[in-house]
Length: 591
Image (cartoon, rainbow, N blue to C red; front, side, top):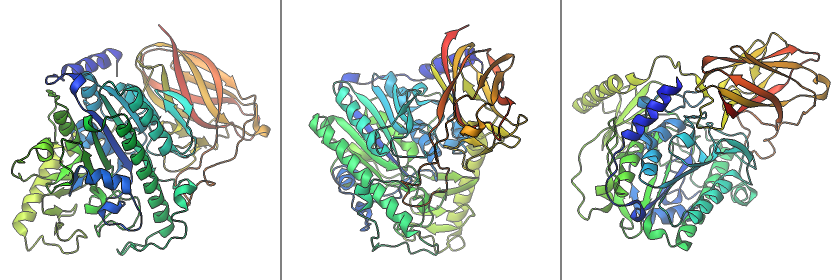
């Protein structure tokens, strides 16, 4: 994308928001907490006696609980929907890695709206909607970001993270560290309205959790096992539930801080998950788990607390979805806006604060993943192959009613077809977007192995690209490329993160883009062991990790435009060149 087009796009986005209503100083704070891969059933308030979540339960009991709240089957689509109020295909999100998780730049995020309304904005946790600026959270309305942008991370104990684009080292168990940052942010912004987004990283794998929580579940007999046909991995369940208890502790810490700061009555707190459970475990008898468009794959808890404004213990039976978060929060905060693009979600404010809620209006909520589309009405779900279930009474989707209730089934089939034509058709057949590099608004641009393409003998450390590195680089004929678009010309300091055993030190490498080239030589051995398994409670399916050493390749001048950034070896005296984790570009001058 040319730089002038990016500037015009940002101007259009700002111009699309018309702000009215009460002054920023009187508006409520927002704390939006999103767990990762936690099922509806992974809470004691929803009937699971395998674990105890008293702080989340208290949050629900002191606010409103949604009986039927729906998200997408996987992570990045849900995040895109709650950020925009629009179904994820509209925003170009079709995958969870390698660029397919990026939210289109012409979408307006809820953080941009709140920032324009005078709010301080911050996100601490897993972003998963684009890494390189202007896809980065700092470019999507969040003034402060600490966490990681990939779909999953390889280590949860003091890992490498980023703070506003710059690489930093985490402090302790990641979910606790993120909560520490959120609490500190509340403290430092207690006198100004803030929009605080806390997308925690657990119970997503790898299944790592401190002993404090694991000891509650190690060898524990689960009184509520999964009862479906699939086999439950009991050790995985134990680890997931231990992680959920850690989440609960952190939710309690955030709520205690709000109380200590006397912000309870002026803060709206929301709690939800991003998809169904990440394995087969008790989930209220619903069919499906993460990745499925069935009830169990897309039903999430949603609790909203606003002390003194939302009645404690309120139960909301109307179906709702992640697309409703955007219009609901802006309405509750008294922010009106005119968006260039219509929202798919609706404001739930009347159900939350009106003494006499409006009468229920029938609506449909659509779930999509990997081409599968299901439709949820207030009572029924039409699954992705056209079977109809009364999920209010049959959450396990056992009895197909598509013949018996043919008119309803046919109506929902037609609705699904219209949705495919109107919404799913907005996804391009091929993603031709390059990875952006050198935006003038960003000091740092990270190009991880996740976004690169290996050539020759080079291969990834794991088939799941997130949090991987490149290895098996054994020949001068091998290379690694990144399809990039340099948004503005400039001079950059380039740092390569590598490992190399002592016997293979000495390779000469070259990094090129167009007519610009810089070289380097591996002169220092750095061969740390793989790590992660010492913290894993269950063997992982993703890549193990290791520490990588920074090598400053020097200054590189890049012209504006699109092309291949190529990393290759000029000389390979040993049996391999090195393993590669990422390239970091730091703008040090403009042209």
